[in-house]
Image 1 (tube, rainbow, N blue to C red):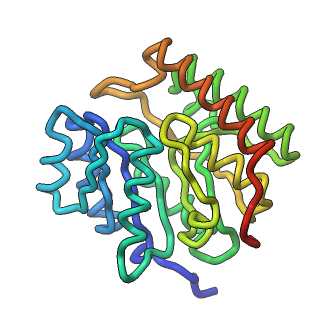
Image 2: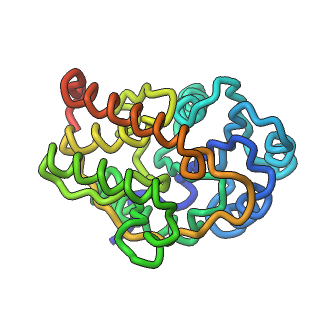
Length: 244
């Protein structure tokens, strides 16, 4: 069966706040094995993140408002301004912990038109699950169980590797500016009944830079609170405005 999409249709969005240590190797690997359609969102970095991305020849979008969601929204706004819109979007972290070689596997179902969204899960394989920090592991298990129970659909992770068709992404009407972004997307996917799957992916321990959440208990608490509020907002106040 001929795929509906190929790697040339894939755009990779990388939100990046102070990722000068990991970004050079990540961009080189993406460009050599995945795609040159790469958008790095410089999210108020104070290091060389912006210069590194520019020197690598990728598209750089600037977002001075801190927040993972703000960075993702800035990339989406940029893509929306293009005359020729993208077909498939990959969200990928810039910290070097997600594995570039997992992208084709996660993208495959979307490329063949069988599903509209695929989530890479770090929680399925013991080897990957064990590399998550304790706070991240507990939070992911709790919120995944909460979503699974609420929408009667199994989900195991709210991780960073997500591949979605552009049409579906636009219909989700994403708007969360901060840590609640992944919760918003997962909850809306489940609530909308979008055709989706979850696949196991590998995960590495961070060797460079600093974690923005899992290594900081205050930020971890803030993230958990924001994710809880986001979950409640989607559950009680959001309704799909389009037919998926």
